[in-house]
Image (cartoon, rainbow, N blue to C red; front, side):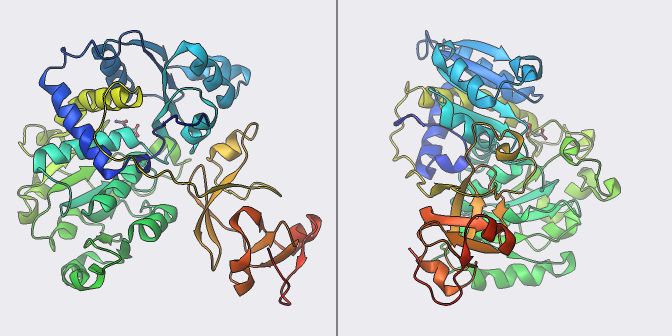
Length: 454
Ligand code: NCD
C-alpha cells in the first residue's frame, strides 16, 4: 500500500469524529447540491462495478459530477478484461495509474476492496464486497439517523431480515456499536448475524449477545442494564438474536427509534433460501405496535415485499429520503478522500494488526473470500483477536480462522492453540496448521514438552 494514501475499505477506517465531521460536510452540500462544482475540477472517479447497482453507483457518480469532477464507468466489469482473466490487482493498478484519481469498487468477493487497496495507486472506496461490508451505505444510514434523531448514541435500533448475508447490516452494526446504540436483531430464522460479526462485536466493541426468546425479551431487556454497564463497556449495548416476531421483539423496548429492514440476499444463498414465509415483513399492522409509534422505517433498497407499499405514505417511512441522502454523503466522502475538504477531526488510528500468512496453505476457509477466489497476487493475511487461545480472523473477509494447531516459524514447534506456550509465539511467527500431518509435512514437530518458543 502506498504510504499516506487513505482508503475506505471498512467502516472502521473512519474515526467517530471523522464520521460526524462527514455528516456536517454532507449537510452543507445538501443545502445547495449545485453549488460545489469548484471543489473537484480536473479529478476523475472510476466506478468499477463487478455486481449490479443502481443507487450506489449513480449516487457516487452524481456526487462526483456535482463536485465538478468527471466519471469513468465500468458497470459491467464482467464484460471487461476480467472476463479474459485479468486479476483485480492488475485492474486497479491500471485504472489508478493515470486513468482516475479515486476508485469506487463493488465486487462479489469478500475482502476485494482490501486487496484493491494494497495495489491501487489512488484511494479505493468499498462500494460493497460480497456479503462482508458496505461502509458508504452505512454512512448514508447513520447520516439519516443523525438528521432524523439528532444523535446516534443510546438509540434503540431494530435490524430485521437477512442479517447473515446483508453487507449493509454488517457495517451498520459495527458503527452502531461504536456509537453506543442499542441493537435488536430480528432475523429471518437461519439468517442471523454470522458468528464472525458477533465475535467482532464482542471482541472489539464490548457488545455481548443475549440469546432471547421473543416472549422473554421484556425480562432480558431489564436485566441488560445491569449486565453491560461496566467501565470496559461504557455503553449499554444489547443484542437480541433469537427474536423472530417483529412486533413481539419490539415490545420490551419502550420505544424503538429506528427499524431497518433488508431484503433476502438470494444471490448469495446458493439455493438455500430458508422459509420465505418466516421472513419478517412490515406493514401497517406491525407498525401499529405501541413501541413502534415513533420509529422511523429505513431500508437500503432495493426492497422486495418485506415492506408493503401501504407503508410508503406513512410519515415514519423514510427509505426514499434515505436513498436521496446518498448524494450529499458521497460528495463528502469523495471530497474528503480526494483531499478537497479538511475534516477537523482526528483520523482513526491505523490498525496495524494485520500479519501475512508465511507458511502453508491459506487458512481462510470462506469460499467467497478474495484470498480464495483470486489466489494470484494475494498473500493471505490474518488479524489476531486473542493470544490464548490463539484466535484469528482472515484479514480480508474477517471470518474466523479455524486451525486447531499453531506453529512457530523460528522453533518449528507446534502446539494446540490453547496451550500456554502459544502465548510466547510472536504474532509474526505464527503459522496455522490443520492437523499433525500438515504440521509434519511443513517441518514442524510437537512442542508439547515445554520447548522454548520465539
Ligand atoms: C444494498 C447492497 O447492494 O448491498 N443496496 C445498496 O447499496 N443500496 C442492499 C441490497 O442489495 O440489498
